[in-house]
Image (cartoon, rainbow, N blue to C red):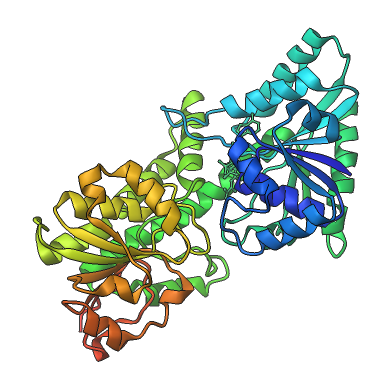
Length: 453
Ligand code: NAD
């Protein structure tokens, strides 16, 4: 099938590459000319396991092209996927300017019948707004074109995006029940048929329910994280090991093991903004989402938990102190630093006068870019970018772990102890066992692991 993807970011690039892998003819559009030039020269703008190979293979096969040519992109695909960003507006609602700009472009240039697929995460009612904008442009151009807007939210996880897209748990598709909607459904069914060979993974529903499903999923996941973080903070006070509790409750099939990890708070481009946007939608309808307000507040506080533990140990004034930081990306297997807890920690330490040596397996370049923006030049000068994890440790008063990269899970503890000035580890992801650390003679501060002995 001929497919256009509008917006070649995390979601657009993965969607385009994976749909090309299935044999479709995919045209990826972006307004960022540098990004398109990089992709056309064989580069990949993001770190995502397996993506480079899929992109290279499908470019070579002629099934995947990248361009900034709007008219050509609209002419190409019978299906027009909108996968542009929906960042938070000042009031927390989803900013739809990019989605609506993409819709206007489609309406302006289209002819015949097109299915417009909202893949971006968008609030309930957005498909109606997209329809209105497209219809206005068609009326202005006089093309007589027809279309149907479908909602197909994306559930991939950064760090496992290709795998998730190729083997999705579910495919959610919302369409309307008129003749054009049913025509759109047939095209979507054909597109996703390869995923449904072994068992049906597609959930068909109305458009608004599909839009809502994406927010409900992210809100639920964020709630589980904040719930465990809140319990972990209490566990620290009452002398309980939250890891033991996690196993104890996760074994109940009604609860399950996933997403019960206490830590330094959630980040990334999705949970923070989607929780906020859902709250905002509720407020527009005179409803207060108490749980989600608390989820957000708990998370804001949790991002400060590592800084607070450091201060509790070393005092408010950290002038002359030096810390090693392992992990900068908001989660492993990505270089994405949007809303990353490491940014909150670094600012806190540096504002209190400390210097830091940081290491992340893939986010070092992105960290330079982001931290240069977060910090003023004098503060930025307090950050040393280490060549490897052990190199970060020299002369540090303590090691602080912020991201649970696999490479940090079985380190050489003797070397950690030898290289640090003080053998103290603050573990924001509970990678280690307190007893194991005690055996190595390392003072260990996890999240919710202060068992009374
Ligand atoms: P992103 O910022 O990585 O990419 C968006 C891209 O769209 C950018 O390259 C930008 O230049 C381009 N763009 C903006 N306006 C455009 C226009 N008019 N025409 C063409 N290109 C345009 O964003 P992302 O992380 O891929 O997220 C996209 C959407 O998918 C968001 O709504 C997000 O909430 C949702 N989503 C993201 C993830 C994720 O893990 N990143 C997962 C599921 C859903």
